Length: 410
Image (cartoon, rainbow, N blue to C red; front, side, top):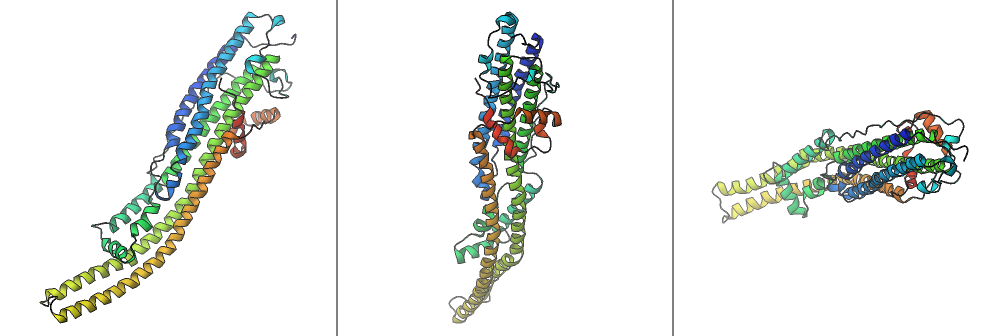
């Protein structure tokens, strides 16, 4: 134990304070994950497939962040206990502090005793500022929703094309609104909102991971021995595990953004096709329906009542002719609907793909632990600083496996 080196009591105290502050950040991040990342309003129509998944995924993050919140109180308590032990115990009779932090990972080195390790940590807290995402009703999403509302209004009772909806339903038994409008009547801005929410969660979690790494590194620089090695390994798992949560959140954010980028252009294609249908075939259908009703009424208005044989023949011929024209229009509408339906199906498939991509995040929470090397950590820190996950070149889909490194909260 002659080579034992211990940090000053003030450093233990500063580190304990720093870790307590990280517990506060985790409280904020947990609240964010169970509120902003849990927004499912507007996931209707083709997006309804995602509605039950949103709270499920946010719940996974809330649980892990809650574990970290509790864990920081545990770490602070362990550090306080360690400082007390060093303050009251001679080096020659030093207790084995390895039991406080658990058994180190296999072949894990004593950072403080490793030559050439960078000495750049400190006990300065880094703020975690979470920016509320832009409303899901803004910009592109609002434009889509507005267009769909106007289309629905035209086809409902009192709208200028209500007759077309009525005739089509009378002839086919199907509602134009149910076939064409309802399936895509969702709030697509919610996908971008969820991307922004998870991106903020990821960034904030990366910040905390970097702060834990930085403070732990600073304490490790001045500490050698078995207890130091156990501490180094223990906090290595915390910083890497927390970084893994940030990675998983980044993967979720990307899944929502990728889905948004694919789905919205397809929805605009559907909107264009619907506008063409409304402005041409449906307007003509409504016009023919109105003329048929007006023509039958006009025959009676000139004095020839329904009891007059000529009136019966006139009305019958007029109606039959109009019905034939209406039949041809409806037949064309059905052909166009089949074409539009292909695009709507493409939207549905894109939603299904996004659902699978988001669901894949769940696997990170149950994956076996994969240990990155200390050498790679040193290189990452030297090249990009303690919050290296925020810099270019980092791959969240690979790094998320680190989530399994999190120690128990107690």
